[in-house]
Image: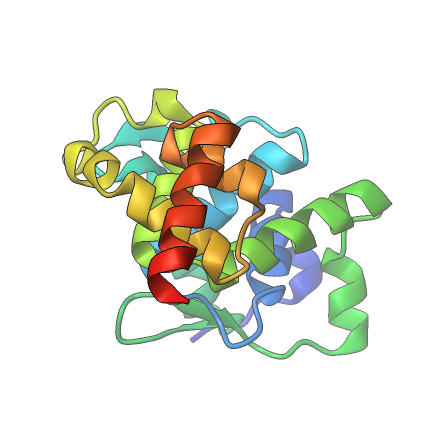
Length: 191
């Protein structure tokens, strides 16, 4: 492990380290890592293409982002877990100041996306990303399975307070009214 001073990380490495640092307890899987960086890149107005994202087997994937993650691990800024997820190491206040976005909007957007992604299961993060960014799902090898389960997944996301009813409707592919009827039907069965 060769730890480079944090000040010598490039902007993409700093962005990635800051972003994964917003996930208390770390990311569950490599899929969560890839989708987190993809979604935060979009949220701050960045270009997924510049970060190397392409439509791949499980939606947006970037070899460049994968290499950034591995480099951060190699340099001691992050660790990997058994499911290939990762966690940023605790940074000093001085180190944190060097990687924190100066723009309030970007800090807010990154935190908002990180909060969402940290609560999503594997199936939920895949569905969310596919629906919000369908052009990155075109080469997916699992899209049929994801879409076959989308109503159940969306209902679960709403019932567990991970997304709003409006977002759940969008994820389910139903109109707001039709989704609300499905939610009422489920509530009647459960309660």
